[in-house]
Image (cartoon, rainbow, N blue to C red; front, side, top):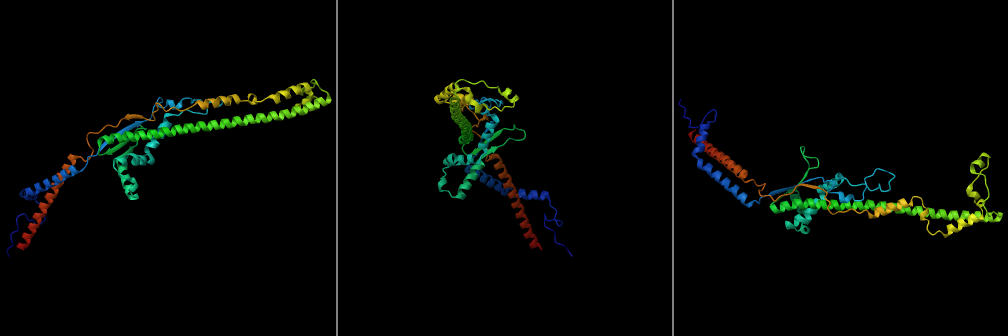
Length: 367
């Protein structure tokens, strides 16, 4: 029996001859070149229709003590509990910066920037968008804005505001604008909190002052009533001048109970009448209220304390956003390189598949 001769390039043990594969690719090299050229042309067309995306960033750090000094005018750093002016404590840079970072990262700040700034540039009519369309546009905006927290090897308060957009000038402008808007909200909140704290302290002191004055006024009325009663007793017994009494300590040694309030009549009618006339003629009880001068001094102090916003900075700009010159995507070289490699790979696969199919047809005819 004779066996048919096996076609060239066919191996019964399914071994792959690399040289044979290379020869097959070389024979149809123009197919390979065609795939590479078409793929490169598609990549080039993609690069032409795709808008370049630029990136700009602003880096912020905590403010210095001098940056927030105007906010602390009149706010005394004292730990003396007896000091009248110890209620208003000065702000620290950490408190101010924490408030700023909260506004920088808050969803409300992002939504406000999206609706008030970004939508106008993108010509989005937010009122005409349904919920799904609004959400899609907002998610697209969030992909362009990033608030980057400090990394492991970066300072603890090192934050970055990164913006990506197709217009390089707006990329830098919006990065700075977002930081400025957060700083403006921060300053408004801090000033409002300081004013609320001052007003609460004022209200409390004024309430305390009114209470003390009212208490003194009622005490004076009670004193007048006591003196009038004592005067009537002194006149009844004919005591014009003060009567000599045992001193309190001597009376206690003799077992005699003495209550001076009940024995005012012993001061004599002349002294009682004089004090009574003075009390009735008194029109203002404030000079006789203990501690009232201290309260009035603190009230005057609090009314003069006003936070100043001129020259205040709630952050330090460590790196200002610059107008980028080179887009971050698409990366033209990488896109073209991948396109060429993909074209070559698809071309090679097509050639091998075509040769395998033709070999299969020849083997079928030979059988």
